[in-house]
Length: 166
Image (cartoon, rainbow, N blue to C red):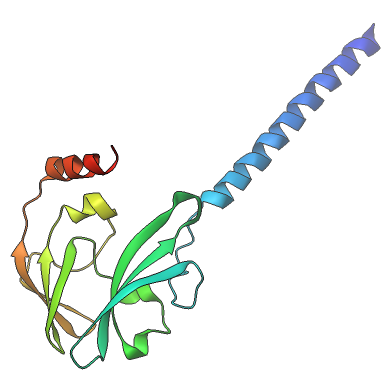
């Protein structure tokens, strides 16, 4: 009878151990699949797709609009203000926050933009060190002149987006 209890106890622990190992393996695989790797923002990376470029009048700088494939979480849209020498470097060095809407180049060193905090709800927020309370901000030696400021209206953004998914 004592051997029956011992073998039953071992079988019970063996089943628990196998279940635990299977759950740990699945958890690790799911974590690895959904984990976002923050450094692949290079033009030559296959996960980056260039959506468009808005060049300055002399074509020495451009606002590069690109999409990054973030694995199981889909894609994210970004925009960076780059000069010719920056194309081989990481694109996030001169990222523009989502609430900055690019309008047009005024000259080679000045870009007119609109400040729209509602864009954070559409595109997702990213941290920025830019002081967006000022009317002029400098990014990569280019002046961003905020010509218009839109009030925050989260309800209207949610209402606009609701129409897209019906």
